[in-house]
Length: 278
Ligand SMILES: NC(=O)c1ccc[n+]([C@@H]2O[C@H](COP(=O)([O-])OP(=O)(O)OC[C@H]3O[C@@H](n4cnc5c(N)ncnc54)[C@H](O)[C@@H]3O)[C@@H](O)[C@H]2O)c1
Image (cartoon, rainbow, N blue to C red; front, side, top):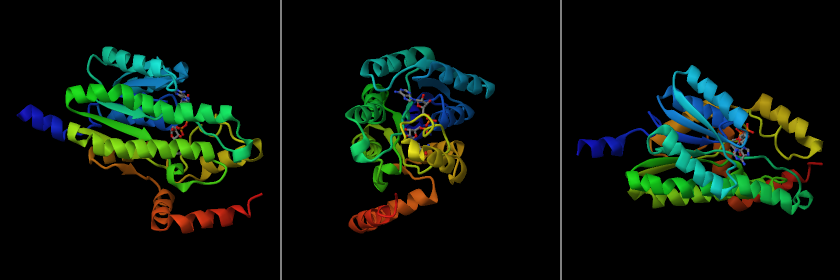
């Protein structure tokens, strides 16, 4: 009985056996380090193995245990292997998965190729679907578990020249909202992170049109209202409280309120403002 109650009310971010995708940089690295500070053991998965290994070295400096694995989240087979290998490396069933890996894609709708769409959908949306698909059965077996899916404020802001990115993030939010309700009775918590700008490598490494990539990167690195470390801390705290949404910045919250108050007026306002953009 005590064990059941302990499991039911345990904070999922404390002493977690965690898998973080895209852990080699930015928000993923911050999640991995914050989990280490909370006594966790972390499998750092990234398509860039050297970057994941750097994160593990930082985890070890915190006195915690980390493992680096190469994984392309767009490949179902590789995510299945990740789920299997993580349990072996951690010597414990995984208790928390953070589906964070993602890429940036910008440009007018008619500038994007179908290859651009598939690249973005495959990593940002299918990557999260794969993560949920291969980790939820293990959580159900344990009678507990937790998922953080990294969406974006783009999941509801629907800003022009971000069509594919917006679609992937809206999908991640819809999936997370569905799972929050569906998995509650299985004692599996779900949180979806929806930030605006966070200073990371996302623009530098993304497919962003040259005409504004420098400006966008400058804005990202200099005018963001938060840091990746603060975002990771806040999201883990909200997961612990059983909250579904994390909208970390004031502008993320403001857009959320505007969009829900009057979706039609909001879309008209965006269209009107965009007429003044070259
Ligand atoms: N930075 C922002 O302003 C911002 C805002 C909203 C949402 N997000 C989301 O946050 C998440 C993390 O991005 P970030 O800003 O930290 O960017 P980042 O570029 O700093 O980090 C992304 C990491 O994902 C890895 N990655 C890329 N493709 C992968 C794949 N196929 N498989 C596995 N790993 C892969 C990269 O190697 C990198 O280490 C993304 O989902 C992004 O969409 C970022």
